[in-house]
Image (cartoon, rainbow, N blue to C red; front, top):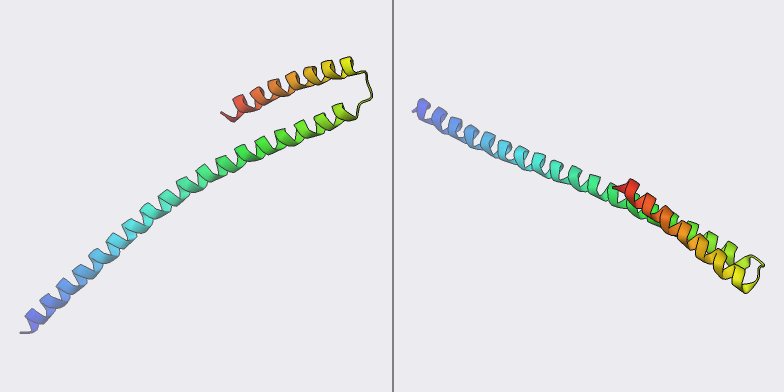
Length: 98
């Protein structure tokens, strides 16, 4: 009889160990997923921050162009030139972000 009781306790312990191992595996998988998601979100934040900085720079340049006292023809040409520079800078930023 005592060996039967020991056998049941042994089986109960094996079952509990298996449950703990399964939970451990699930938690490791969840941790890996969370780390990957965290990395992806950090990259997304960096990209959005770069876009925001670019937009803020464009706003500053537009304010400068709009406040600059020049003739209408010169103003249009200056704005066109600056817009071209902005587009080139944006391309460089996008290329660096890749």
